[in-house]
Length: 273
Image (tube, rainbow, N blue to C red):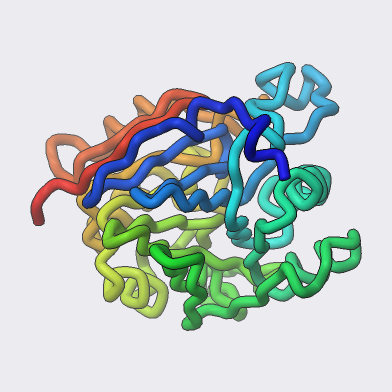
C-alpha cells in the first residue's frame, strides 16, 4: 500500500466533527474526507497525455498514488467520469480501495481487470455504506427515458448523482444532470428528501446537455441547498466557463455559493438551516 508514501496535502487536512473536507481537482473530480479520515474520491479524471488543444492544464492535478483513497464513487460511464487509466492506477496504489458506480462503469472496470470483488454496482434509489462513517445515496442525474416532451432522448448510459452523508454532513454530487432537471419534480424530490447541505452542480452557460446557469440556480433552490458549488469546468479548453458568471446568476438570493479554487481544498461546515 502507498499510504506511507502519499504526500498530498489533503492527506493531512484536519476535519472536525460536523464538517467535511473537500478537494476539487477540476472538472467533476472531488475528494471528500470525513472527521475519521475516510477519503472518498468522486469521478477521478487525471489522464497524463494532455494535448494543449484539448486540456487547459498541461499536467494532471494529482498523481493517484499521492492521495489516500478508501472509496471511489462514479456517476456514469463517460471517460471524464469513469477514467479507466486513473482507476487502474488507484487499483494498484490503494489495494484496499473499493469502487462504486452504475452498471456500465462497473462493467468497464471489470473488463479492465479491476477485481469484481472490489466493485459495487448501484442503482438510483439504493444506498451504499462507505466504511464506518459515510453512506452514498444514489439518485438519477438523467432519467432513463430522457425528457421526450422537451425533445431530449434517453441517455446512452445510466447517469447517477449521489447524496453522500459524511458523518452527518450531506454532500450532493449532481453528476451530469439533464438540461431540464429543475423542471422535473421526479428528479428534484429524491434529492431534496435527503436534505443535502452542499451541492456540486454541473452546469454550463451554452452547452445544452446540462442545465444553463438559470437552471443551476433553480436546481439549487428547489433542492434546498444551503451551499452551491460549481463544477465541470477548468479541464477542457472547449467546455469551461467563468464561475463568477454562474455566481452572478443567483443575484441577491440564496443559497450561499462556494467557488473552490482549482486543485484546492476546503473544510466545509454547514450553516444553520
